[in-house]
Every structure is written in C-alpha cells, then in structure tokens.
Image (cartoon, rainbow, N blue to C red; front, top):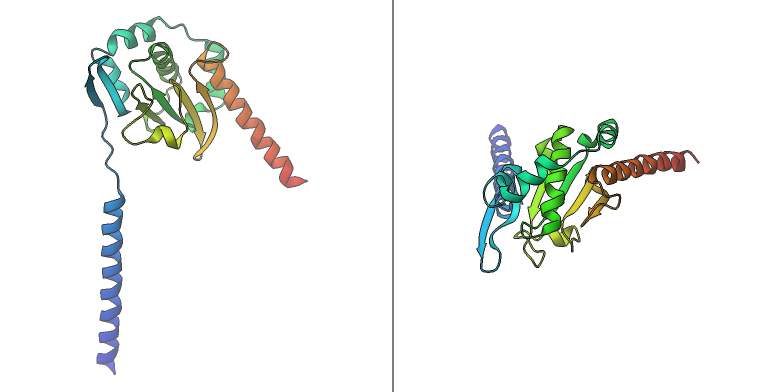
Length: 198
C-alpha cells in the first residue's frame, strides 16, 4: 500500500515537472527578441534609426546634429511643466513614434525629451520607436497603435490609451498638449466614479 502511494506521488511529480518544462519551452518560443538601437543605411536618407531606441542614441552622429540644437534651444513653458508634475505625468507610460528623416520629429522629439528631463520622467516608462518613411518598424508596433504620422506621442495608463499628440501639438507646445491629455484623464476618472454611484 505504501509503495503504491510512493509510485502515484512520483507519477504526479513527474507529470507536474513535464508540464512545467513544456510551459517554459512554449514561453521561450513566444518570447520575441527586440533589437534596440538598430541603425540602417539608406540610399536616399543615409543613416536612419529603426525600431526601439534608447534616448542616448540621439546624442550620436548624425542625429545629434538636429537633436542637440533643438534640445538646447527650446524654452520650456514652466507653468505647463509644473502642471505636468502636479498631474503626476511620471505615473503614465509614453510611447513615442518618430522618424529620424522627418523634420517634425527633428523639432518635437528633442523638445519632448527636454520636457521629460525637466519632470524627471522615468526611462522605464518611455518607449521610443523609430519608423522608416513608410511608417514601419521591425516589430510592427505602428499597426498595434494605429500610427500613420510622425511624430506621434501616445499617453497610456494601465495599458489604456489616454490621448495622443499627432505630428504637431495643437496648442503649439507639447507640454501644454500633455497637460490637456492628463486633465481629460482626471475628468474621465471622476465621471466613472459618479456613474458607479448612480
């Protein structure tokens, strides 16, 4: 009787181990390796960044030519920056699609990065994706986020899109547009609370 229990326990343990190993193997197959800081050479545009990027990549030539100049010369709207801090922008995620060949990206991406530096935005909450002239990236994230113009700055909270800035800020200032997006998010939360009470 005791031997039967030991045999049954061993079979159960063996099955659990087999299922665990199979599960880990499947996860390994499904894991997508994301290449970071990919740079390609094109006939028409020369060097171009493509796919996920770290912000330090823009401090290298030839990108630093436009990035550093705009970053240093941009005068922040300090009132709007204060509002961003007050509205806890650092608790949101930002997904930024840019084209290193695009003049709008040359202007607005360095400005955004200066704003994020000023509010001490965590790098872990920032995703930068560079696309080609067809607005494509190696991982296809532009389709997932329905991006057709660059730059596109998407603000998310808990995996849900709160708002976006497409091509250029409607107010003329990225930080002011971001404040408006965060205010809309606060209002939508308040509306949800009142809906539940009624």
